[in-house]
Length: 202
Image (cartoon, rainbow, N blue to C red; front, top):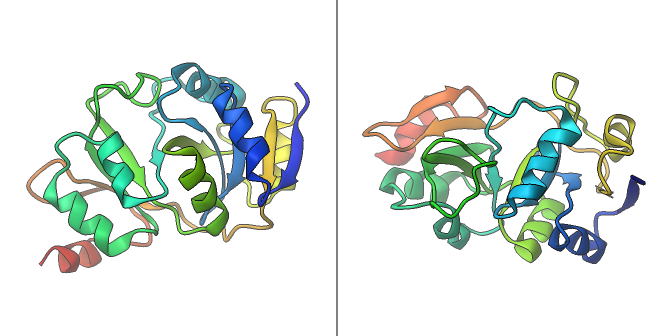
């Protein structure tokens, strides 16, 4: 497979790849991600192959607009809606009950992790393509890339297209919070603290 690198502003080639069952790497507000359309099971499975990613690890969904939450989630908890209104776009990933129509390659459980990234190139792609299953654009276990060149160094020949949006901020991953219970439970510490969450829910 030949891996092409194009400017992030050139959305059409990326949309063509995604609609034809391919996967695309692009910049986010943390690191570069690699993603497929959220309802394309075969394409999502190819993310695992490209990354040598263990199959039991679920892949989060990125969306470009709050209204897309209804497409991904089922009986969305009020807590998730309130936290999303406060922290999106931004570094908070909410675990919510998933739509049964989401493919098994996204998550083997009854829940799904979802967020809106705070990056113009990512938002432009997500708003044009719709919800995407996205994880870091690296070989599993290796460093997450913050430039298109770093993605190319790891995934050349494994994915068809990289959108180059310059260097991303890197830094720590988003806070991962379970919104399915009575109170928020942080599964992964990140920029949004428990104190921030409690404050937003008061």
